[in-house]
Length: 260
Image (cartoon, rainbow, N blue to C red; front, side, top):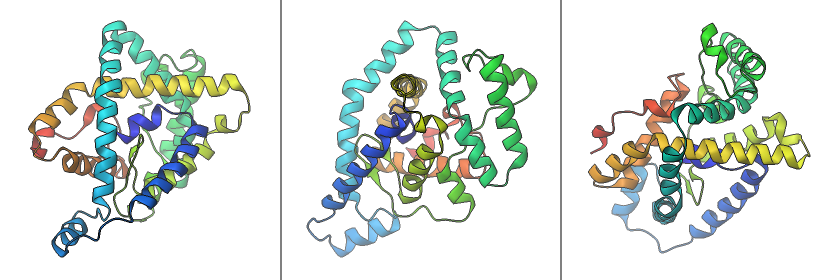
């Protein structure tokens, strides 16, 4: 869910929220010392502040149930699939410069060429990215972020961290999210209209991700003994899959039945 929520926010707002959430989390770590059994369980899951993470997970789940999920259902009813695909393409196109930078940092020069080609074609022939014209040229979409880049370089994930509003964002991905915000050229545009475009496309992109996972997440919640632990496992599997340059699309989530 972290990817969905990060897409919902403008880059400048993300930075402020990340700093605030980190401070809240640090303050929440000062709680009653856990028992040896609890410590062992948290160490095994690499989740040393699990009670704090679970409290934020409960908050985020309440927000999702009250606001995000109903909005995603309304979005599905209101817009035909072609329109939803166009908004998704536009949001992806805005992120291509970040993907290009991380392709280069990973020394994936062929993939960097694909990203550059996609951005050039879709920004022109694709009407500012609303149409994925590059796909017809065999240039397939992929996503890279600095968290993945750090993983490729062998930097460990660090202890599991679940932030309010944002969702799962362990230290490696937290650093990556901040770096990606600065890498995006639009971050430096001091124009209200640019900020509006970023936030607007982010909201549409976030709602679109949630819409495409309505059934998946409902089934996972219904069949999981521990929904929090299931999503924690799913998040880690997806991130490892992305670091290995797997297919980075939300449609290709692992089979949720394995988390029952």
